[in-house]
Amino acid sequence: MPSYRDYHRRSLADRDAFWREKAALIDWQTPFTSVLDYSRPPFAKWFVDGRTNLCHNAVDRHLAARADQAALVYLSTETGQDSRYTYRELHAEVNRFAAVLKSLGVGHGDRVLVYMPMIPEAVFAMLACARIGAIHSVVFGGFAAASLATRIDDAKPKVMVTSDAGMRGGKAVPYKHLVDEACRLAQHPPQKVVICNRGLDPAMTKVAGRDLDYAELRAQHMDAQVPVAWLESSEPSYILYTSGTTGKPKGVQRDTGGYAVALATSMRDIFCVAPGETMFTTSDIGWVVGHSYIIYGPLINGSTTIMYEGLPIRPDPSIWWKIVADHKVKTMFSSPTAIRVLKKQDPAYMKQHAIPTLKYLFLAGEPLDEPTARWVSDSLGGAAIIDNYWQTESGWPILSAHLGVEEMPRKFGSPSFPAAGYDVRLLHETTGEEVAAGEKGVLTIVPPLPPGCMTTVWGDDERFVKTYFGTFRDRPVYSTFDWATRDADGYYFVLGRTDDVINVAGHRLGTREIEEAVQAHSGIAEVAVVGVADSLKGQIPVAFAVVKDPARVATPEGIASMRKEVMDTVDRELGAIARPGAVHFVSMLPKTRSGKLLRRSIQALAEGRDPGDLTTIEDPGALEQIRAALALRP
Ligand code: ATP
Ligand code: MG
Image (cartoon, rainbow, N blue to C red; front, top):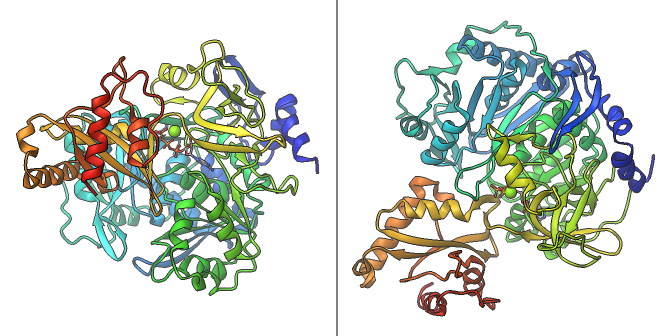
């Protein structure tokens, strides 16, 4: 085994040989002719002319040796369902779903929008898309109709796959009416909507001619054998939207071959899961962690993956560890927010089950603070706690410990080192020069981006280049829009974002998106939304709004009713997850002379900190109003 340093150095200095070896971890129907085509920077094409397929690699190729091994274990503490699908059974279900999609006219390159709760059919649908070369676009089942409609119009799906309802905390959360509403709002609604009916919403209605019942369709294709579509390595496998700080969400486009190779690499070198071993990722299929480490990563690797529908504290806060014990989980992947929720419970729950098989707990999505990391490390006893840093755009870790390569010490608060192929540099915000050890810089990646990373913004190459490679005029590097430092030993520490995004209980919401939702209320003139630190949820959105008619907020009753209307508007536009924890009314907002909102200063005041450099403020009175509003209100 090489040392981590040699491994990483080789991934950059001897790129072709390194990735050629890694490419052998997956099956190719047609071998690639070159490892990388970087003739049109910053667009990278990995494994040129190679033909492969994600579904073949995740399912079919394991049939020879693992047909009777569990591929997918599905557990729901919401419905009580407990199912196990071997690779053979998974293969059969995926073929059925693929046959259904084909019968509806879905083919190579067509988009299928998946708006689903955490049920096995969501996995079958995604793998079925991959099988026939269709592009799935999963939208987190929790987004409101308006958000769904924007994503429908961007992806223009031929077919949508949904369910009557999700379940949360024992209550059904109807989905289907949101799909109907989104289809009404959209300019390019799908021709057909396939419904996986769980029987949770008796009030669900169907649109004649458009809505189809999956169980009925499936019954017509029980013995289906749908051939795999062999895609050129760079052909898209899926689109996944980021939370969209600029209002219009960015459709991250992923390739096929590069993604499969990157995931296979990460399963061994980072996540340390062998074929036949079990991984439990607690994320949702609507997020990138779900795509990569509930579905594609473990399955491409021939491992067993656990899909869990339910809360971490129901029926009691030991449920995750019970799952780990029952299924002999080796590697778990969750988020710091979830761990903070557990931290508020009786610590005895953490020790209720013997979990000797658990070797690693990976945490990602937001900064992992030292107290939380220490607490979970102490509570779990043996398992290594591994902070890892990445983005929807990257598709797999950018920074992580690499215990599959070399056992190196970890530091609390640090996601350790760059993954293979990532040429990470910390650059000074304005000069673009590399910063010294211990200094704060923008975390950037010198292109070409490694295999697995986004290849472009769906339908908008220019936006890809401008958004991600336009930060430093003289250096066309990829910006993550996050701040970081690196210590003298080479460990990275991620400090937060250079733009404004709110992280509510692990859900990332753009402040701009929430502001736009508030502004959908016709009585609002202007609004600033900031994330305020919250010990439980990470952050909560707080809104400062300017009303068009001041008389409406002249009385306490007026304020209360306006506040409720604003919150209801956000619920409708974006979903309850984005609802501000507080709405304050002011007559003006603090802005720079160039007209930019001073969000950072507002946030500082809301968190009781110093508002910082105010030399560019247009009217200091505006900040006084924020102070006064905060003093008055909860
Ligand atoms: P958008 O790009 O639309 O604003 P988003 O950035 O909120 O969406 P994700 O791609 O899911 O959505 O989140 C990636 C971001 O999460 C990173 O850029 C970083 O800010 C944060 N993050 C992820 N992992 C870590 C980590 N281990 N430590 C600190 N921050 C992390
Ligand atoms: Mg982002």
